[in-house]
Image 1 (spheres, rainbow, N blue to C red):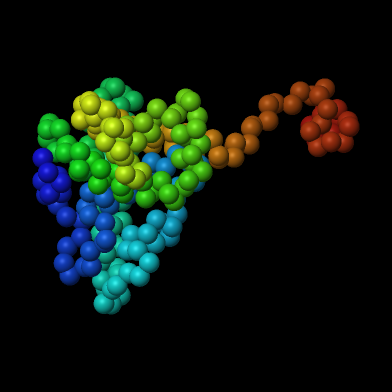
Image 2: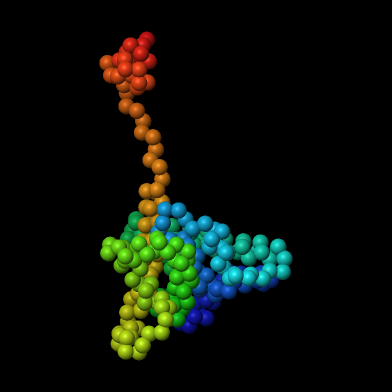
Length: 228
């Protein structure tokens, strides 16, 4: 399957006359996925990730085009969020990964170029929260989550002698693991978000009549606030 085949497998995100984003549908899908699953306590602010959609100098003819483009992107973002959360629920309930990123079509193996394009968008989302991703990579317990993506990162020219002979097989395995790791990352993001919330006030246990009064008077409860 070529990159064009993967792109055509699902409807285009933006339609004329809306200006197209510089990212292809595959790259945009990876970018928005990365935004959704970034493993940090607070989600990436829309103002931060939207700013990178059209580059430094976005060109719009009028306000209607801006609203149409942003509306289409937000629809896709919310759809991804819903689909990933549903996939996570299925994984937790049945141990089944049924979530499928845009680079997957049917039961066929995705073309490596298609996955690489998708991962390029994911990488751009990672750049929005470098500390969160760096801590993930540097932790022995969590760096395995990033491993399937790493083979598709564009980190510069690789010398031919550095490419393993079984590279195609390795990349096939990595591509097959990415959907599961997306769900794991979403789970991790949820955990970190929950951990950052302030603990609710604990209900006071019932005060005994001979206990010190909780008002701080120093008297027994029965001789203070608990006096009948």
